[in-house]
Each structure stands twice: as C-alpha cells, then as structure tokens.
Length: 434
Image 1 (tube, one colour):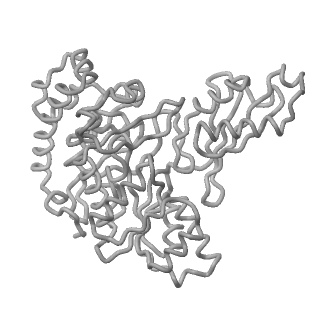
Image 2 (tube, helix red, strand yellow):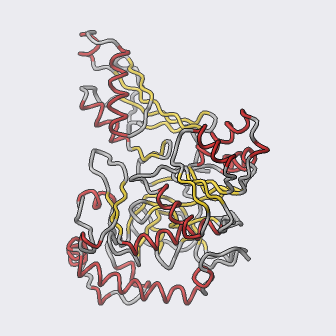
Image 3 (cartoon, rainbow, N blue to C red):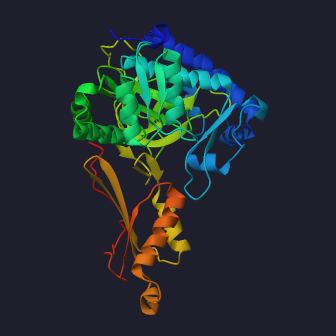
C-alpha cells in the first residue's frame, strides 16, 4: 500500500468513484449549458440537452472540443463564471500568435494544487521534505502547479524556476533538497553537472517528478542512476489545469488519472468512436469540477491506452500509459510545444518558399532542433544578403514565435529532397515514444 494525500478519494471503490463522476458530470453539463454560450450552441447543434446526460454512460452523446475551438474563443469565449470571480490565468504558447488562455477561480486553484499534492505524496513527499521546483514559473503551469502542491503537502518549497544551474546546485546542496520537480531533460543536465563538480555525496535527493516533455524508459533509468533517485512521471495540460491531471505511484506502471476531477476516454482519432479499455487511441478529457474554464470532451491529441488493472499502491483511479505519440503534428522540444505551422509562418513571412525540413534530435539529454530551408531562385540569383545574415534573421524570428532558440541552415534551391506524396517536413530522431 502506498502513501496518500487524500486516501479516502484516492482509494475509493470504483463503483463509488463512478457514481461520484456521474453526479458531477450531470451538474457540470447543466452548468456549462447555462453559463457558456459556446457550449450551449455546440450542444444544440448536436441535438443534446442537459437532461439527456444522466451519468457517465451518456458522456459519448456530448460533442468534442479541440484546441482550435479554444483559440477561436480566445480570450473570454469559454469563461464559465463572471470575470470578477477569476483570480488567475495560465497560458500556452500560440501557434500563430493566438494563445490558449485558461482561467481559474480560487476553488479551481485549490483543486489543482490538491492534484499536485497527491503526486508529490505518491512520490514519497511529506512535510519533512524540501521540494525543489525548477519548472518555469509565470504563464507556464509547471512551476505554479507543483509549487502549490508542495505547499499543500507542507514541504519546504524552493521556487527556483528554470535555468541558472549554478544557483540550482547551490540551493540543492545548502538547503538539502530531497524532491526535485522539472523537465526530465533538465534533470539529466543537473545530473551531469553534479557529476562534473563531484557533488554526488552532497546531494540528498530521493525522488524527482518529471513532465512537460516526452521521455523514454532509458532516460528514466539514466536520471535515476545519475541523481540517485526514483523518477516519477507526471502529466497535465494547461487547458485542463496543468500538471497533476495524472501521476505515477511507486509502481511506475502508468499514471493514475484523478478521476474525481477528470473523466478520461480513449477514442479512435479518425472516427471519434470510444474505444474499450486497453486499446490505443486518442486521449479525451472532461473536467467535472473546474468552473472558470470548464472543458467537456477535450481532444488532447495524445495517443495512449487506459487500464484498471489493480495497482499495488492501493489507488483505484484508472491509469494511463505514457503517451506513445500524437495524432497531430505537434512536437515538444525542450518542454515547449512546437508546430511546423509556426515555423512555416515565419519562413513564408520572410519570403521563403515552403521547401523546408525540421530536424529534431537529442544529443546526450538535450533536445536539438534545426530548421533547414531553401533559398528561392530569386534570392539565390540576387545574392544580395549573406547566408549568415539570412540565418541570423530566421533564428531571431523563430525565437520570437516559438520562445526557444533553434538552429537554422539556409540551403541552395532544390537541395531538400522532394516527395511524390506528402512532404516530409519533420524528421524526429529522438525515438521518444517506445
């Protein structure tokens, strides 16, 4: 049996849990129909009324919503409560400048922090621990979510944010950090830095909670060995709340979804058909307690499967397997969502043709991304701007769009191989989904 933050809920019998889900779903559907014009219109178009939803068995009757819907309704179109009742926003990066902004009431934040607290306790956290949070803070949900969860558990919380490795290591050694929360790639970087400085004997870490980017089992084992810890996976989306939607327990065999707050489904991404337990498909979430930004049947585009196989930790909440890929073309590079369409927008705005490739790799434990683009024949003929100047301009504009720096290589016309079918825009060499 494991450690629990809210044992009664986390170990609730499945039948009781599903009854709670049904009760909350019925209330939530009526709430969004009454308070969010977008949902009312979507449900009316689908011929569904709140009274048609009598429990989780009727969930499939509701229409899906997508990230495009969220962008189209930016900023206030999905707000479920008066703006005066909201106390915070969090946000994702926008693919073409239009962001997804998620709103929170104080109660929404309390729920989110409880979810993160459950994850910390599942990783062995107690009020005696020092929780070192080096996810980014600000609009990104990683820092604020785990920070709040750490407070709920009662840990001494170090709100380090990301970067500045020297400072991270100083506080880690001086204050005796025992739990670290960050991206897996940054954890690997810290492991290398600790080894280089001979600090292994001064590090007191016992566990790490890692998310925001895909990582392999091989990377988990590497992190566990270099940091001398047990590495736990955590999953979340800004749109749903942030990290803590699901988390690993000590069994490390899938992430328990917090079913008292989120109802998961697996669907065929082509047909929308709900698939049975154990089959791989697209993960869909319905929020049954969130009020400021309530999402019903939100398509995550992540591909995975669910299992209710009993877990040795004693938790009864369904587990999701680590995502095996995506049903769209989004990449996650250095913890940042990157769409080829963003890169294409920058290149076209600078006058290049759509002859480009994005090559993503992982060198050591660091993601690398290089954009290769061809000169147009006119650019090559004019020869009025140096290749180096062109590359620097593209690098600058891409950083402005993506929020991260990527490499750029400008090539002569007709250098990139043409495809007779669908153009191969992305070459991802990382083998992250195994």
